[in-house]
Length: 474
Image (cartoon, rainbow, N blue to C red; front, side):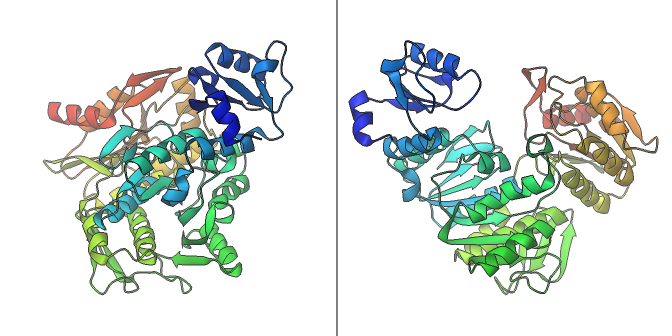
């Protein structure tokens, strides 16, 4: 197994598990995969000091080879040694679920900061240490990148790490080595079935946050309005774990639920949460989906004894890019950009816009290529059911034919309430031009993203920029 003495003797300067990123004096971890020998040779050619693998050394690499029984366990131990076990020096908090992770993580981070903590944030939109932010490439980075990030956070004086935990990261063990002080569950709806294959497997991956990675003294905060959340709550409660149940619908066994009606208008949300504070909470965010997000995070903050003033300050100030983001609100015309790219998210966003809309509601959306195809007709049906007009266009088509993707979406539609415009910029322009006084347009699917993937190439593209440009030209 890997030891501190071995790494010192090898003069290891870095750790890597991607042969394309190897630098001189890196210790390279060769994961079991087809083509491992080629990857190992490439790593050595790039300057790797040694290769750690479960396989026998290929010809000519014996002097550079360290054979182990479990390469993932060896990688984890090496990361702990090399980065000086940074997660032991941070209070780590994670939120998982299909939808709502980003908004919840932004709120959690803001409440901790308002309470005087120095935070690091990992998520879909950005990674942040203190006041320094960089764009994110994965919702949850790989294990070695996570350790490197945590080490930088510790060096910068951070006390807390807030992160979104994707189902892929939990299933693949990217968060191994972290014992979370708190874990939040938002909801579970159809997504990522191209990877997990079944909803049950998807659920089991999400549940790992609470059954495998939550610290023994950690607290779980769970939305029990979701059937999967209720199952997690019941299992954790039966196991004697510290778990808080949250319900917007006021379920009897909920530990945290609003009193009376929630005011949900274009100007935001107002509601009373007597288990947390006597006075009503207010936020400029709107929509039932944001009620769920806010309740979840307030219950979490209360469990962590974050001061009420810090909760209120965060609710008043947080803005989450590409999450029901109002990019135009002039002349009685409203344009919203949202990341909704799952059936449940699209339904929730359109339902919120429908309640607020005095005129016609339209939506521009597409579905991602090389991803779960089964959700496409479902999203088509949702769009025609709630919106007056659906502009069917490209999302990130990747290596699929954009028109073929649109045809999959159309398969779920039984009316002619759609217009096909494969070019996304043109679809946004035409949809904006068609708006009248009182109308709302929801541009869904990409949210904060500033690119479009066509083939295997990323091109600059921002729904917000396109919408503002189109509205200014109207």
